Length: 183
Image (cartoon, rainbow, N blue to C red):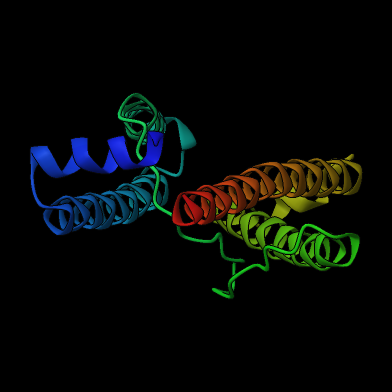
């Protein structure tokens, strides 16, 4: 019954297709804003050769993300779409051990891609801003290994927790729909 009431409430505020279109437009705007902010940050860093010049852009980036997440939570919006891996493939929703093992492999692969991409970008910017001698400093190798491990672990657990939560929510959503059809 709860799902039917939610759909009726949404429909009373406007056509569901219109609401879906507005939601998609918001997400597209968000992505373009992210791309713009990232480009501006990189340009500022390259021009000034300092990371300090892009602090305000990072803060704006985080504020936009927080605002979007909070508004989604407050509106209790749910889009029954499956999470996808970094390469765009849909993750399976099988809750058995084999399905979870398959997803964990994909989370590991995505974490390696994320770790290497971010590390490469940071070191290229560092090389550009500080010069090629910065890699000859003592402790460079140990700092790099620590950075890689930390970034990998954070990336993996973020991927794992967010996607597993989405999959459980998706499975519950399907079960509710099946239960309503039986009634």
